[in-house]
Length: 168
Ligand SMILES: [Zn+2]
Image 1 (cartoon, rainbow, N blue to C red):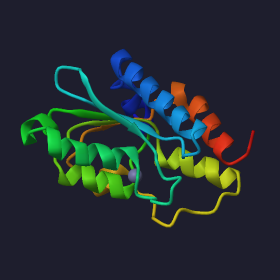
Image 2: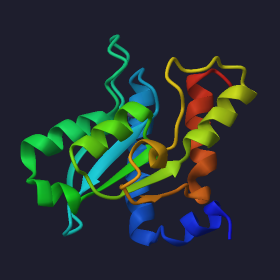
Image 3: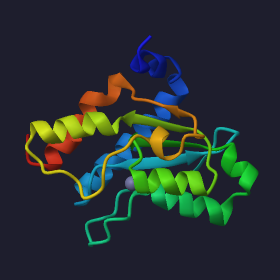
Image 4: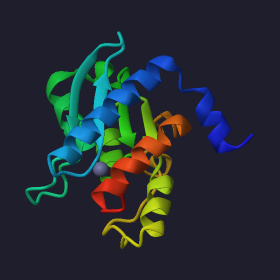
């Protein structure tokens, strides 16, 4: 069975609902002049504890929502609460955010679109490469359970990135 088929099967309806909220946050970021990425942290009881979206427009390119979640989690959750939490995100963590997630001991990650998908869209649009090598979460933080992508959300996310790069 392919990696994609295995990933699809472990994303349930509740996960999809959380991912849709991440996409709303991504759209909010784009509407405000930032890059379209949104993420939320859900605790073991299923409660959304924190949400954020990309905030790079003022020049700090490290202000990714997943990085903000890692920082918030160290200030507000115990190590066991962090390990039992799930981080949902519209786009797969970049290496910086995967490392932060791993270092602070957060639990499962569920992403809607993969780094590989985003890379193929950017290549198609002729957008130059990022300054940081794109590597899968599993390569950076191998102990973290990861689910994704969610194929049913790909078109919507592609549309947001197309808008960012003036392709629509
Ligand atoms: Zn990141």
